[in-house]
Length: 432
Image 1 (cartoon, rainbow, N blue to C red):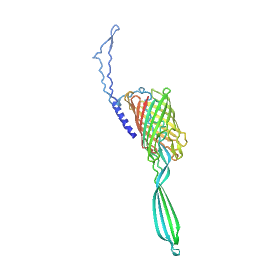
Image 2 (image 1 turned 135 degrees about the vertical axis):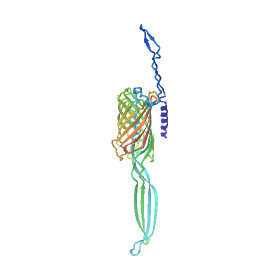
Image 3 (image 1 turned 120 degrees about the vertical axis):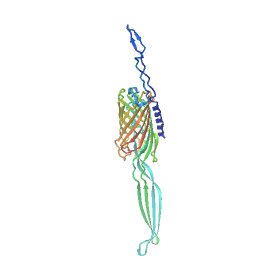
């Protein structure tokens, strides 16, 4: 299971915690005093032991959280950890074949007519009942492992252009679509009369009852991995980035699973404001997600858009806090697809900072709010459906050695339909 990756990550983090604060400060060094003698000659005098100040005794620092923060200028460019983000959940209308039961009850009655037109009398009656499976094609709304699985700008991203390589792992538990309607039942009754010899008459009554249970609510578990890199140019004011996603999804309905490489995303970034003294950044750019992976099969045919995502973001630092945010609009090239408006804001706190060459050089807890607003196809009648949702993300960034960052977090919806229970993150970034 990929969830086992979390265990070694936490073990490494625990080990690094134990290493912090092990270095002890060196004692102060006293310089010899100099005395100017008459005649202008300098004569070095040995320090007066009686007047020599006492050496300060400094206890070894053992609590990493009591050390004074290191100034941001001591960190390499791009020291602010990236935003964790969240992954938008999409739903598509697809057709599936479901199995029901059909019960056929046939009753045969034989009558004979009485003399002088008297009413018929029943000679015999037989009834047979058979049950057999039947199939029916139904249209339901299901979650899907979007081939554009790494398109959202706010995922594992910083507004500051940065030279880095990265790896992201996500797990979604209990992705689920909406209810797909109630159970259905159909009943038909047919009766035929067959005249016979010597006044006999046969009637055959056939009752057919067909039952289909409620279409199942589609659920799935999703694993996703993203490999990528970012490279700066124009003296660090711009960068180009590539993301390559892999998805594995298993569901409760045959046909909604997936195991494939998703659509690749290229991100262009330019910093209009890049202040290395304060760490403040204002940037913008364009993300393009190309249809390099498999498309989505819907009731209206295959759907596979190119996604154009103009965006802007910023970082503002205030002592031990910093805020970063992204705002973007995702415009698909296929009008059947949904246009999305993303607003993502995160607040981070420098709980601990040490020299950049320490094994663990910072601890930054964080909390983020991610608002997804569909601008069209807002109901479940379209071939693609994305609900309004506010997702909260919480976690921690750990600075590893001089250039590494390990981020661990969880996310869950707090408004709208709870289309998944929990999302977990592990993100590895290495600056170069």
